[in-house]
Length: 212
Image (cartoon, rainbow, N blue to C red; front, side):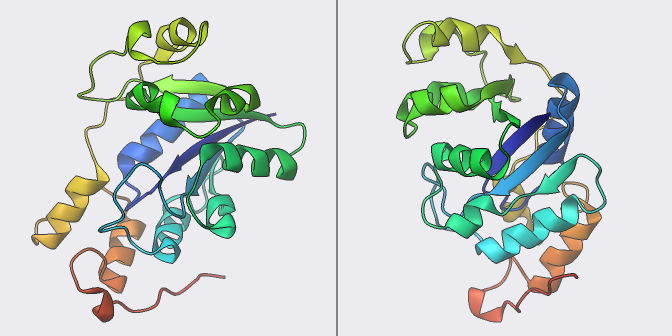
């Protein structure tokens, strides 16, 4: 069986994430796709990052009752800074014999040389890369890895649905009182309103309620 892994801050998760996961499942022949909220992202600023328990709750609601997409708390349970190589090691232990497929946006290709143990990552899994909207096409010379990886990765970028939605834009819209209803699933929008994320001080936020 083939299992996709789509990691991210999911701060908040939005329709672009979910459409990317669906595109990956279809193009990659994936039996399931795990959405894994990171504990602490290594390459993004921590300011404005909602607590992991809220980001887990939003992903949980976004994929509820989906037959292919599902939440994984592998990174949250490990804690600390989330490195992809550690995620893959944990998933290989949890799912022996499963073929792992890492789902990425094309913008990540220019940063792969900065990833922890990147060549171990490339050994652990297949990369399924999709063109990101508004990002120039990545060429082999833009990927600072040893041969044959630059040519192989640059030639394997897929074109899915180009959805120009970002979590940072959603946070700005919430903070400024603008609408964001059609950027996220209704269940996620309801959770954001319930808990008061992104538009109130942390001291005003209530504890999330987990669903049994």
